Length: 179
Image (cartoon, rainbow, N blue to C red; front, side):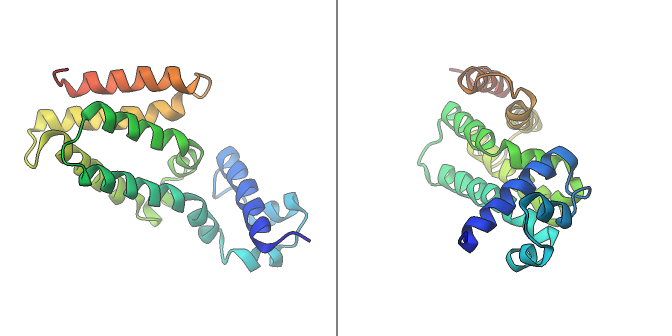
């Protein structure tokens, strides 16, 4: 018999796949349980609700995103290209979770992720341009950071290294920084 943590991970894997393909609201807990060959009460043993299950899937994204921004803030001086590369890598690792939250904007709002992402971006803009960036600097940073994030999910067929190079070069160009 599988350990509870194994079952929990299996539930998350099936839910991630179904949420990505069908959306959170169109995926029932019964469908997840059926797919796994377990009962719905067995699923409830691990997750109190669909929202709890969604939260467990996106929590690593939230934790790693906060850790990335905090780590950047602890550096004495930020190197913009390294920041952009790290930001790309973070989003690339979590593109499946990003697809779930982007297709379910209500999920984003319920988890407080919209405000969190905007706060992360504001903190990163401060690192790139100082505490009082101009409107032009702020908009360039939003285009750069948002574009990097979008590239990780827009081009799934492109090899990661090629995509990283093209996306980071484009984001760096959008920032209009001197090399």
